[in-house]
Image 1 (tube, one colour):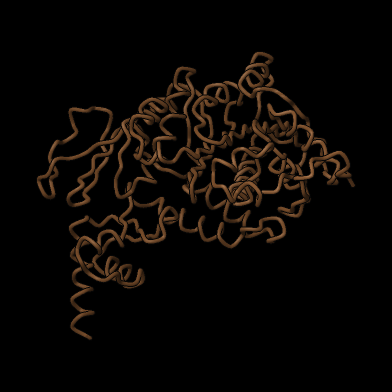
Image 2: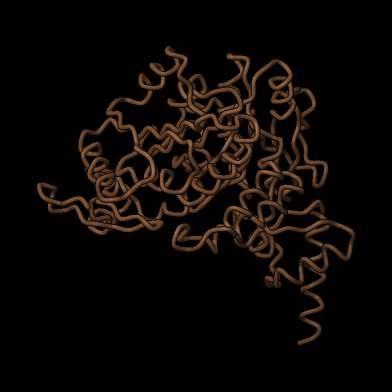
Length: 416
C-alpha cells in the first residue's frame, strides 16, 4: 500500500470501480462550477465516472473483436491525458492480458499522483508512464511505427487539435475513444466557434445534441481521409454535458468512399420541425419546407450515417451485464442506455422532443407508453433516445406525430 506522506493536504483518497486512488478533493473545486473545477492542480471529476465506465465496457467489447484477428498480440492502449490515472488503472485492472497501457500527462503533478496511485493498488500489469505533450508523444510513436491499438482522447474542451496525431498513431482497425466537452459549440449555441474549430455550419434545432454527435464524427472522418483512412462509428453517446464517441479506423479507398456517402447536410424547418438529410451535392438541398413552405435552415457538412454498430452495441450490453456494480458503479444506467441505443439505431436521423411539440400544440404531455402504442398501431416504428429523456425516434412524419398527440389530447379531454 502507498503512503500519502509528502502529498498536498488537499489530496484525499477516493474510490471508483473497485480501486482506491489519490485525487484532489472534488468538493473544494466543484462548488465554484466548471471554471474552478478546471483549476484543480490535477483534474478529476467524479461525475465522469459513467464516462470511464462506458469506456471500460467499450474497450473490453473491442478487445473481444480485436483478439479474433490478432490472437495473442498485445493490446496497446495510450491514455493521452491521464490526470490522476484512474482511467488507466481501471483499464489495467479490468481488461484481459496480454495488455500494455501507457498513461501520459503533461502535468508533473499528475505524474506524481499516477505513480502514487499505482503503488496504492495491486494491478495485474505494469503501467508505463510518460510526461509529455501528447501531440509530440503520438508523433514520436508514429515515427517509430510503434502504433497503438486504442488511443483515448479525453480533454477539457475541444478534442480537435489532437485528432490528426491520434489518427496517425493508431494501427489499422484500431480504435479511437474521443470526448468533447465544448457542447455549446457542437450544439449550435456558438456557430462561429463551430465553424472555426470543426469547419462545420452548426444547426441549433430541436435535436441539437444529435447534430453535435454528427459534427464530431464528421470532423474525425474528414481528418482520416488525407491518409487514405476512414472511420466506422461503433458507439456514439451524448451524456449530460459531454459527447463520447468510439470509432474504428479503417484503411483504403473503398472505406473512404463509404465515408463520403455518409457525409452530407441536415435541413430543418424551425416552423414545423420537419427535417431531412442530404448528400454532399448541395444542389439537392431544398430551400423551402415541403411540409409547411417556410424557409429551411441547414447544418453541415456532417455525418449522416449510422451513429452505432449493431453488433458492437450488443457486445457492450453483454459486457455490462457480465459485471457487478463493484466494477461498473453506473451499471444500471449504462445497461438502460445501451439497450435504448440498440433500438434507436434502427430509426431515421433526428429525434422528436415530445415536451417541446406538446408545448407548441398547447396540449398536455401524454405518457410515452401511450405515444408508443399509437405510433405502432399506425404501422410506424418507435424508440426512446438515450440523448433526451423526453424525446423519441420514429419513422413517422412530424405531421403524423402531431396528429397523434392531438388525437390523444382529445381522447383524454373527452374522458375527463
